[in-house]
Length: 419
Image (cartoon, rainbow, N blue to C red; front, side, top):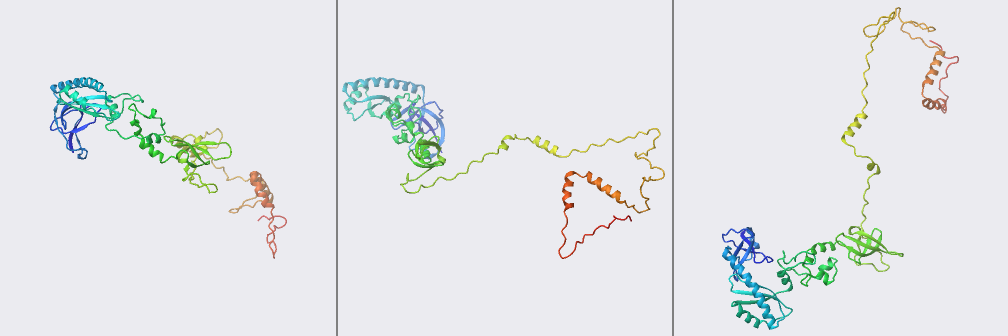
């Protein structure tokens, strides 16, 4: 890493690196630096900083000193001399009748050299002009021919975009610009629309060239034969920035135009095949996007509180505690125990009328009439659907076995006898 300072000799000039040589320079200060032409007056744009050694082009020259008040006064005198030199030089050019346009003049800081910049369409013999100027200024005279782009950079101005010239603001070097850059960007090839004030192609055509070159590789060209989801056709219009194309589909009737994205079509290499040859299928089948279910769209999103409420509703509600019965003894009623049960009647259980006497340890058998009455009451209490299901089973008779007899035991006549 090397410590340097960046300085400019003109406001619209290029920045150069110089060795601070122990001086502490801040941005915006005027300095005196050493150049191949002697001492020059410059302005610091970046103070002391470090840069890699690879960015330095040797030899790097030092900063002599920070400009003093006397140095600033000398620089102001030189600017006045430059204005006077332009007026005198224009008069001499008109006297000699030379085909040249004077652009600017520059005086060295030490005052030993004056440089004039001019533009011309061809070569100019200005030897006599140099002699007349040397006799007037009494110093070394240099005439330098520049191009129209350098002229625009020195003079400055407003471009067709409404902003100051790029070359006079931030461009350090002029890069080559061609008509191909305007063609790639789908711009009009009218010279009046793509040319700057200097008469050359606009420098801004180069800014987006790389981006357009990458887009051209992914989008079919105008007139290409492509395969679309609706069939085959030719591209009639291309929008590189949006990556969309307009396709005229093949058909016997009226022309049908549809607009597709560059990812939805496939260009056929070699163009349209000859008559009789099969059409290639290069378009890859893409799965259709899954549409969300209609029920999922209608149902609102449930919050966690709603899930908790749903779970609580699903759980069975706890049985309510029955209130404890409190018995109140009426007059003339039997006294109850402390557990609320009625006391047993004296003499044991009473016998029902018409019931058979029960022996100790033996359950009396019911009569035939009692059994038939119990069945009728039980059948009446069954649900209707259950009775209908049981009815066909009772009616269905079991087929007799082959080679034998029906072993189903028949009930004895006269009904069952009570045991």
